[in-house]
Image 1 (cartoon, rainbow, N blue to C red):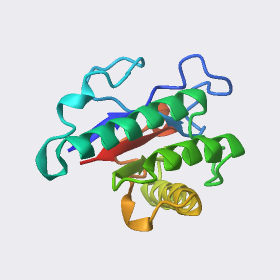
Image 2: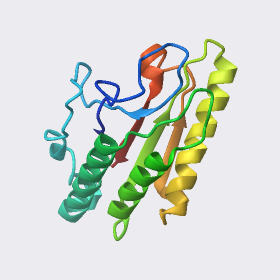
Image 3: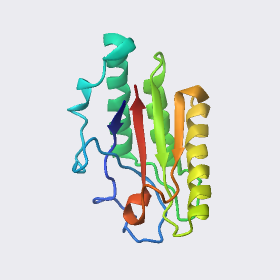
Image 4: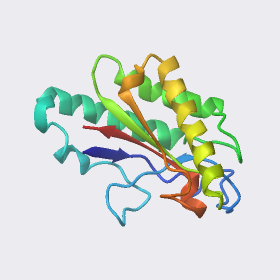
Length: 171
């Protein structure tokens, strides 16, 4: 089960006009099909702490979830059009999430997208973006096996949705 964390940064954020040709990423994720952009994660603890991890694991997952929400709210993970290069602000946000992952075994999942009509081109760029995020986490001290990447290309998100990167806590 994944606890989905993040905020739709395109609502009121600078530089995001939702143009179909723009391939950025901003930390959007929702925990319900019709979730609003205010996704605070307040309802997510119900799934945390269940299973083998127990209460301590649930607390660590909640801590990481809160760090994801805060970091992405302050600085969404952004890419420029046709690029897999992370901005310094995005690297900083990922570093804050990595700090919250220190001293626990919480794993995260990262889903990246690219909105090209060409499926192969979208998949390739999405994979490069996922690799850039994984490398940033690894550079910040998070073991590679704790970050699961899902590069979806244009399969799960198109248009404005392809601008969003989801970062979740995996249970």
